[in-house]
Each structure stands twice: as structure tokens, then as C-alpha cells.
Length: 212
Image (cartoon, rainbow, N blue to C red):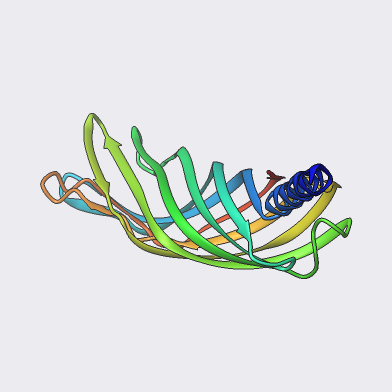
């Protein structure tokens, strides 16, 4: 009886270890630091007269991503993502005028690894995602300030390469394109400056994935 009881305890302990190891291979967290790029189109106004039209500027700045994911198989995983684009700014062609942009968003992503990232040194991957994001624009011109914040549906595509450091720690290099809601300012009361966020946000960066 004692032997049977001991065997049951050992079997249960072994099963628990196996389950824990399986769970470790499935759940992961990650963080990425990227350089983001945003394109803006804007017009300039002074004293009710349009001085320039169709100007365009490209801004760049840091973006931070945090993910919590689950591996459904060796090649397919799903994840929740939260991103922050920190404040970027540029000066327009008119003196003392400035545009600031920042955004944040949440996404649900589906990622396809070409093969098992825990078994291979280098593993390419692609992914798609959908969620919501909230870009914000701030414009100042000779002491006059205007602000607009929009939010709505967003989608993204991504691709990159995983590099296995150890079986539970993965380094990745990733490119993403995010289609965000347009945010537009038209300071019609002052008729001085308007600006429009036109294109999606692109980013290239590196990150780490930790299997827990």
C-alpha cells in the first residue's frame, strides 16, 4: 500500500512538473523599443490669408510596445499588445509655430512563426492585428494653441526575425505598419494653422520575448 501511495505521489509530482514545463513554453511576455515615423500634411495661415498649402513633414521618435501572449502551437501564437508613441514635434514653415504628436493603442495580434522559435537559432515571423488607438495633435502659433484627440479602429501588419539566445529568452527585430484614425486640427476661429495626420505609423525596432 505504501509503495502504491508513493508511486502515486511520484507520478503526480512528475505530471505537475510536465504541466508546468508545458505552460512555460506557451505563455510569454515581451517588450520592444522602436523608432516610429509619422507623416503630416498641413497648411499655413497668417491674418486670414493662406500662405502655403499641402506642406508635408515626417516626424520620428521612440515607441514602446508591451505584449502578453500565448503559444497555441509551435508556429502559431496570439497576443495582447499595448503601445505608446511618445511626444514628437516639428516646426512648420511659419515662425513660432509648432506641431506635437503622440498616441497610444491596444491590439489583439495573431503571429505566425515559420518554425519553432525555441528550437531554431533564427525564426522569421509575420503577423496581423486589430484594435483601437488614440492619436493626439497639439498645435501652437504665436501663443495660440489648439488640441485635438481622436480614437477609433486600427489595424496593423508586422514582420521580423526571432533570434534565440536561450530556450526561454528570444531577441527579435521587427517592422510594423499601423493604420490609425486621422487627427485633424482646423483653427478656423483664428484661421492661422491647420494640420492633418495622413498616413499610418511605421516603426522599426528591437525587443525581447520571455517565456514564463
